[in-house]
Image (cartoon, rainbow over all chains, first blue to last red; front, side, top):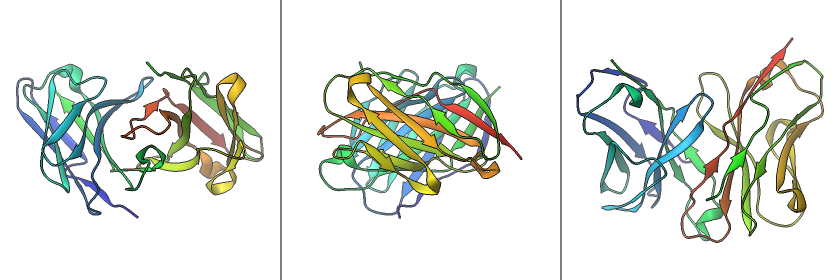
Length: 116
Length: 115
């Protein structure tokens, strides 16, 4: 099975700080995703990447950016953290193969970010 | 845009009770359907999925789901729940045969099973 790891389980930051959330997958997969999970709202897609240096906006990209310099690593960046970005952040990577829409997504354990 | 509705936000059941969680989606074309589960303190994991063929699909831990195309539904069922089924359940949909697996998730249903 794919293993997806995230750099921190819990993170506390102050308003205005620049925040980096790191995600690593160990199976050389092309696609990687960042979601945020909020009570009552489910999971919402922030950004995804289908290859190194390639990225696409998801449904709620405002206030976020991403970086994919290596295939196994996908970083989510909060340029200037705000309190409304307090949330659980989940990274996911699906298995490979075509069509890709058939593939199961493997999720990391999540990073619970609190912005004070 | 595709949307997914899970009408039950919180469900409380006693052990051995039967479970049905509703999921409706909005897209009228070919879809791929998933149920994911998140146990307390654990990461999201796949429970079952439907792509084509038999509309009744079976997943792990005795769960099953039925795809009813005419009703745009993919309800999750289990005949007899256990305390260990306490978790949050998410229905997810994506359009079939797309280049990327962009899932749209429902808002989730929190299930509490009392012993």
